[in-house]
Length: 419
Ligand code: CTP
Image (tube, rainbow, N blue to C red; front, side, top):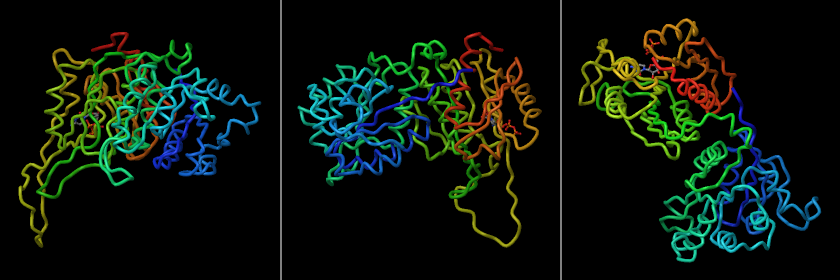
C-alpha cells in the first residue's frame, strides 16, 4: 500500500487578533506530518511574534521581502516548493489585496506569484465581514479558484456576536489536511490539487460511494443520572469518516457521545444508547454501499431502567443486564448487504479472536487492535483480516491508519469482493 508523501504549506499570517490561533494551527499541522513555512505581514507581528512561530515550525519566519537570503526571490521560490498557501487569519484588508492582485509586501507578492492552491481563513469583525466590499472580494476570490475556509459565527474579540470569527485551529487543520489529501477543492471548485500526478494514480478514489459509519461509545442508562459506558473516544471512527471524505465518499456518521467535532462534509446523526444506534442504522442502511462499524457498542443494557434517581441503600444491589442487538451482524445478514467492515478490540489472543469474529459476523473485512493500546490513544496499530489473510499496518496516528484502511477497502470494494 502506498504512503502519501509529506505535504508542504506556506502558512501566511496577517494582522488580526485571531493570529494567536495560527500558533496552534501550525502545531496541529506539523503533528499530522505537514511541513510548515511561516510568512507573516508586519501587522501580524503586533499580534504574535515571529519567535513563537519560528520555535513551533522549526524554520525562520519570513516577514520582509528585502531581507531574505534568496536574492529577493522569496516571493517566487516559496510557492514553488509548497503544495498550498494557507492564509490564517486573513484580514478584510488582506482579502481586498488578494482580490485586486496587490503585491506590496512579501506575503501578498507570494500569493500573486504562486503556482499552487490558495486557502484563506477570514477573520474579522461581523460588520466588516458583512460589508458589501468584503463580500464582493470574497466572491471574486471564489471565482478565481481560491478556497475559503469559514468564517465561523460566535462571540468576537470586539464584544459583538456574529459571523467573522476564524474557524478554530483544530477544524482548520482537519480541513487543510483533507484538502492536501484530496484532489479537488473543498468548495467543489475546479482547483487541481497538491498531489503529484504519480500520487494521483496510486490513490484509489471513492467518489460518490455512500459510506455509513458508526463511531464512539454507547451509553446505557441505569437511572436518571447514571449509566454504563466504555472508554471509546470516537477518534478512530471519526478518522475513518475523514479518510472516506478525503477520497470523495458521501459519509453518514452515526455517533455515540464523544467530545469530537464531526469532520467537515460528513452527515452526522447523534445517538446515545445502542438501541438508538441500531434504530439509526436501520433507517440509513438501505441507502449505503459500505457499512463500517467502528463504534464500541455496549454489549448489554440495563433490563429495567429507573426514570428517577435510585436512592442509596445499605445492602448489595444487583443490576440485571439484557443483551443488545449486534448491529454489525444484523447489517451483514441483510438480504442485500452493503460491503461490511468490522472493528475488533481485543485484550488478548488478537489474531484468533479477530479471525473468529470475522467468521461469526460473516464480514469480508475486519480491522483488529489491542484494546489496551487503542482506547483513547492518538495512535494505533491495526491488523486487517480478509479472505486473502492478514495485513499488518505499522503503528501510526489514527488518521494515517484510517487512510490505509480505506485504501485497502477501496481495493476490495472495487474488486466486488462481497459476500
Ligand atoms: N458491534 C456492533 N453491535 C454490537 C457489538 C459490536 O455493531 N452490539 C460491532 C462493532 O462496531 C465492531 C464489531 O462489532 O465493528 C466488533 O465489536 P466487539 O465489541 O469487538 O465485538 P463483540 O461482538 O461485542 O465481541 P466481544 O465484545 O465479545 O469481544
